[in-house]
Image (cartoon, rainbow over all chains, first blue to last red; front, side, top):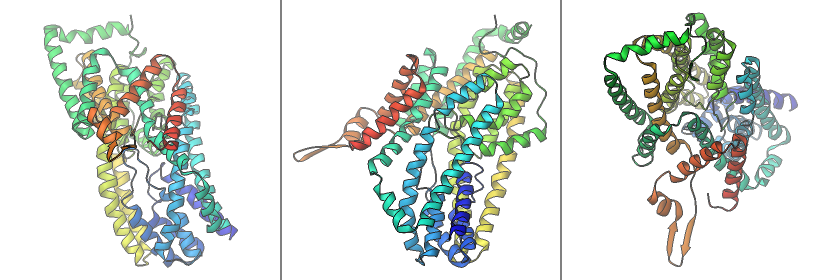
Length: 258
Length: 272
């Protein structure tokens, strides 16, 4: 069983990367079903369970930062348990879902704990240190691999029962709290952006954008088109005011350069 | 006196060759390698365009400025990112005003994010994976293979196509927009901040989940009180609070810590 568990863990690590990096979608359960089936020597059952899990995850896609139950762990553990325990596909799904939900909580934690590294990255950027920036990204890929491989290995090697007990022992409020914090976190990013871009004269359009989204629930594309309309109006108003001088900026720029 | 937003070295960079652009498309696969909730794809974005920036900015100070700018918050759809890469690299190569570059980047990332979700996650994926799954359920091993082939031919076609298209569009658009970089920078900031205003209401998920019961009557704090005053009030208020903290000189790290505590407290008390 050790060999099979290790191979499945290796696959989980690879597709754990693919879920965020690469996105060739080898991480979909329909593919995992085939691969785990090959590893465990039962391709047909693997395909059937994979296809069934696929139908469940089909509607669960990462939209606008919202995270569905983890498809990597759900797919690998679901298929592996289904084949090993001889469960029918539906029961395999029931076994896989708690893991998939718990793992998504952990991913929230992972994405939160990676934020401090961005300040390290700022320093690398300031020093024009390209190796530093690359290192941080390679570190991220490595963490994704190890994280998914370990999580897939443990329950398959030690057995479904113990693993389920362990997952259920984590207080729900911690997983819930982390995912709430994950939802609020983009506010910090937007605040950083505002700090750089905001000028008093732009408050008007900021309010417009907010109202269009919050009250009228317009999609972002519509909002950006309205922003563009305002920008075009503003652009031509100002250009016309400049009158015949409007060619001058080019000239100024050249002298500036010298 | 040179403005803070202008690159020191104003000589236009040599154009990026198709081979270099293709190399950058491969790097764009790592867009989300360092994904996190504070800057989202920022470091992966910088990673993706980095060889391009190094080719463009031979002046070390300019490279540092440009890298710093491109470490700012970034989030878009990972398949469509190559279009933004192309446009931004064309602008960087032309040594545009840094504020203009930032404005264009912020203005394009939001809409492309929405378009990408609709195109790929809500259309392409369900169709291709649906075909694959239906074959797989019948025990046919071609299911996964057919799915991967169909999905990735379109996936990589889009990535490579948009890179070239974005770069060419960027170069051409810049030529046309020569007149008055100040005005263009201003226009870009206007679009950018409209989008940021909209993104705050859309992306920041901050809700109170608490019903106040007094005898027979129930009062849902979120839908009956807060939403009545103003929808998305908490996301806006929280973002502005963070903005204020930043202005007071608090580090973003502190703000992340505060946010985690808010989430855990809200969950523990059962009010979020």
